[in-house]
Image 1: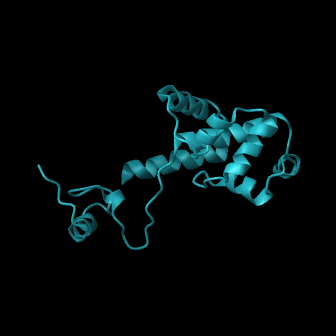
Image 2 (image 1 turned 90 degrees about the horizontal axis):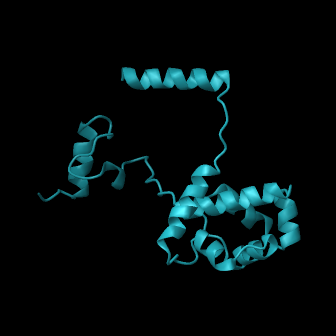
Amino acid sequence: MKMNTDPNWLKKRASMEDGGFVSAGGLVSEIELPGREIPVKADPLRHAFVRLLRLTRRERSLSLEELATKADIDLAELMRIEIDEHHTPNILTVCRIAEFFRLPQKPLLALAGLLEPKDASFQHESLRFAARSEPVEKLSREEHKALEEYVKFLCDE
């Protein structure tokens, strides 16, 4: 079966469906709709890189500013790395991070998206690290109530 990938046809069909949530002849998430940005897919390696940087920095009780000063890294660049997981860091920055924290350079460059990892287990272990390093916190009463109300709203739609 051949899918119709004509963008105009897809947009017309998507607008007729449930607010564009259901795909029609293709992935609605892959076409541009007015006022809607196409989300950039998250990279598990980049997420692991950011988590590694944050946790290693915190383990040594360093603020972003202290790390930037001690490792001779541009503070704005360091902030972009920790805030925007889609940001591709400068090679020199990653090398300085590796040197400062005494981490191997090549794996860190691969995590940062600057080298292609050759070992399949590298991505698997990086994904496991990223998933396991996320903080697990109990919800506050307000968060729990907001979550319950929103799930109820979604179920009633």
